[in-house]
Image 1 (tube, helix red, strand yellow):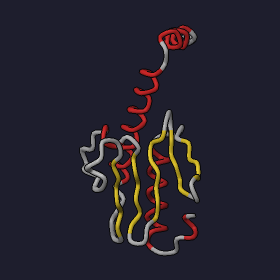
Image 2 (cartoon, one colour):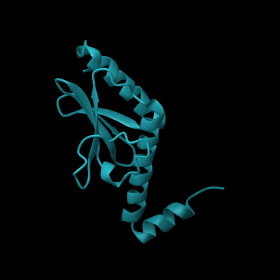
Image 3 (tube, rainbow, N blue to C red):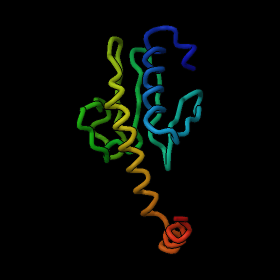
Image 4 (tube, rainbow, N blue to C red):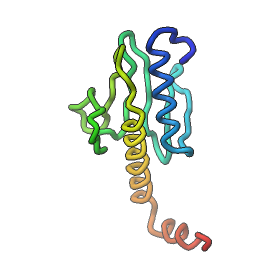
Length: 130
């Protein structure tokens, strides 16, 4: 899909993808929903879509994430998702985007631990080798 974007959106999309994948080596990238990239680790982190005048990156649980660099600029009224709209001429702040991705991973991991039954947590803790 990125190769099909021959204008500024392709370069922006590639920069976003590089930053997200560079945030954690265990991130899984899948291409779903008519060519939409979905990045996950212990749950969905974010999805990205090219639009006519922007590239949108939507964080699934963005409303629950700290955003000290103020990257979120869309979907601010929602209770769950937050998005970053990149427009022509915008620079991708790789450091800040990586930090936001890492925060999303931490959030996902916290959710995973809360969902695990007590017995499963005990088994997992007991199975660790020193």
